Image 1 (cartoon, rainbow, N blue to C red):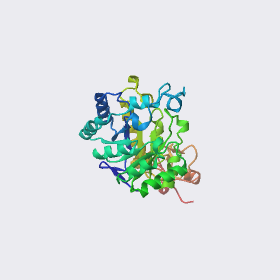
Image 2 (spheres, one colour):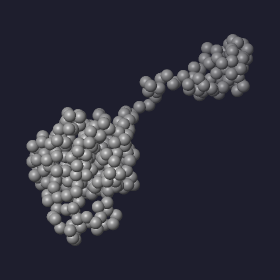
Image 3 (cartoon, rainbow, N blue to C red):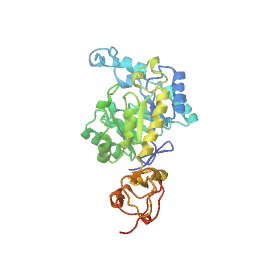
Image 4 (cartoon, rainbow, N blue to C red):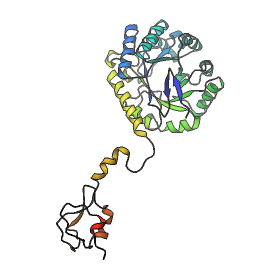
Length: 352
């Protein structure tokens, strides 16, 4: 699978998972809080921080009725119009430069999700290292062409998309000039449950589209994300906040700093554990071989005495013959006196 470099960091199966902290609207309309989130993400060990670049007017119309109003009682955002939601959640464009700068100071890779073509132009002026396409925009082919034409890597969430739609999206991005594509398995519910996350799709998607696959995870905790690493995920994106109790449009399904650190640590351990197909003792196990069972003399035996279940047993440690030889050795006579606690070797047996 092709290795991809974003902001100087290599991403691929041969590298630890690339962990993205998604700020979204968790800044709660405070630049100071946004900068605190950047610092907290860095301290937690995240590799990148992601923004969202839009305004309420580029997202929807200022209407508060019909399909422009969220009536679903199960929605986190019930009772708001789409315009109100995006007005509350958006990151002011004048904040982007100081956030990008703070990320650079702390060694974090900063990029964003553009939601329309004007956002791509704006992010280009900030020298964004890559582009993320959100699930709800993964069928917006003009937007995808615009981002792909920059030639920079693209990360595309796949929430709700059919195979046919994803095929069209990937073809569109490649034809428009993007060679480095990472698809993120995503379930577009907020929060998502482990049962409807279906991360078994990850290797299938990788084989189908011949590109790296990651996970954009809206489930609670870190279990789903860590499990995805075992299935080949090279990127993990999770929403991030300073404290869920502070509220915010995405806070209820966002990780707090100690949870983000846990994700970074455990996803790294999961990746390290993959290794390769291996049988037999590893280098680290060689010293443990001596604690296997083996055949030992467990009672003093005299010269010419026969071995019996009473004086020969398979016990630990492993310096004697393998236990598989027990039946063969029982009934054999020994060539000399042997003390209890002696490992049995072939040269201690008489040839009958």
